[in-house]
Length: 82
Image (cartoon, rainbow, N blue to C red; front, top):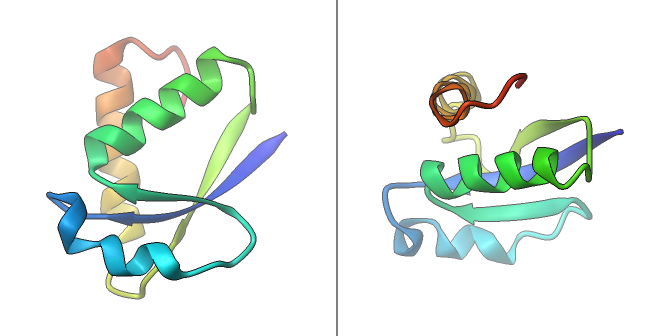
């Protein structure tokens, strides 16, 4: 199963908290890149899903860069696959 996550990330929660009000029916994450990395790591570790799809909560979010940053952090944590 692939889990869709609508994401809004910034250096601090206060910068993106207004995007938390968006409800598109998916799991939503509002916070930092490190927090998102931890969430994805936990999803895999708990066997909740085989993978995730990141969906931008705002057109200002660069998903390519975000995905790259998260992947690097997962590799640093020792995640076998991402």
